[in-house]
Length: 151
Ligand SMILES: [Zn+2]
Image (tube, rainbow, N blue to C red; front, side):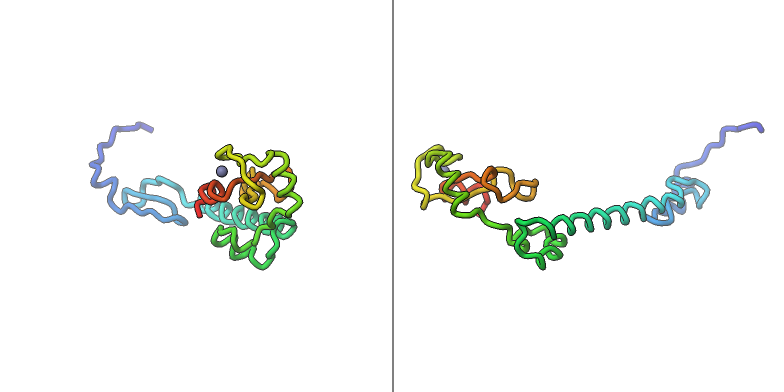
């Protein structure tokens, strides 16, 4: 077969350009396959994988002792707002331990405060996998804590 150079004007190539998530992308009146139709399987696969991921996350949240409001899990995965989960707060004992460890010094501004003037904070944020345990607790003065959480 002899192959000859065939000059096609751009306007002919883009004629009938179609872009469909499921039907693929074609141009040149259907003669040019930019993204073939069969790749729609990938589109479905991705949706399926996302559903599996979500299911695994819900399961994990169900077993997470820090999540005190199990019925908040669905609103949470839809909105990503942690308030729905009512994440367990640090106990007074955990707070006292952290306070003693820090010798009353705020971790942010390095000033001394009474324990009543301070608030507990997750060192590693809960949404990054940090748990509500003594080792993940630090005490911040109220001003620093407010600034940190952007309240
Ligand atoms: Zn401070």
